[in-house]
Image 1 (spheres, rainbow, N blue to C red):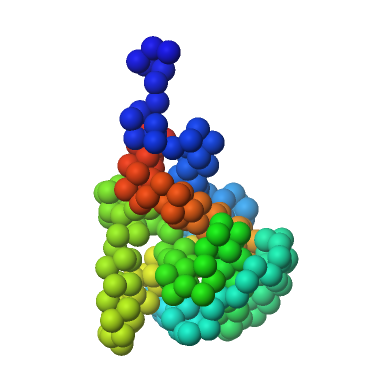
Image 2: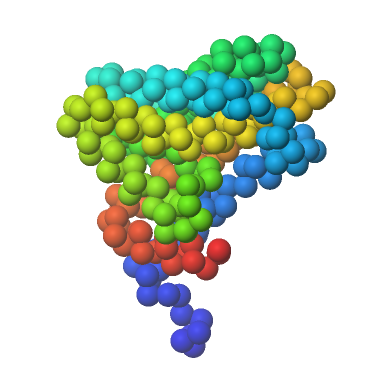
Length: 266
């Protein structure tokens, strides 16, 4: 094997099969493509759909997103474990989300405000099931918070700097908030809710903007929710694959390998 054919040093500490798993996870986490999939579904450019949202409506959506994240956060921080794997398939969780999306599409903004917490709860259950599939401890507070982290993944960052907006950049930012939360500070919990909701709210706003395109209605709301929950299931699978490999090889080894792969696919 020539030097050109040899894998980068950062990848040699992982088994070839695990390199492939990490590459698949990296592609999910760094290039989720949610906006493109939403736009393709409705056939309306997302920027034009966003223009249809008045400021008051966008603010209402952000408020609903923060409320939804706060509810799943309180569940995650409670003493109750997430539970053992239910065996519920991704398809069943998606079917429930499709039903709530149809309701939201039928009743406009009031429907969205009611639908969003329900859909978020369904996604939390789906994310928790995926976490268990990847060997996470259902009794661990770290696992519960890792499930909440998923809601901050795969949305536009506040900066174009890849070091800040990439997967590990987001994990570092959230880890600082999590550290504060574990000290039982109410203000720290609010900070973590805001940190997650800020990114989750952007994704939610994209979805709702397209729901308000004329003729989308209930059918479009259902289809948009199918894409929406699929996005977070993909994020969860990528996230918990990385965490599984970190338990196997150590966080620093996996981080270096991940960053090598991410640089090669940008």
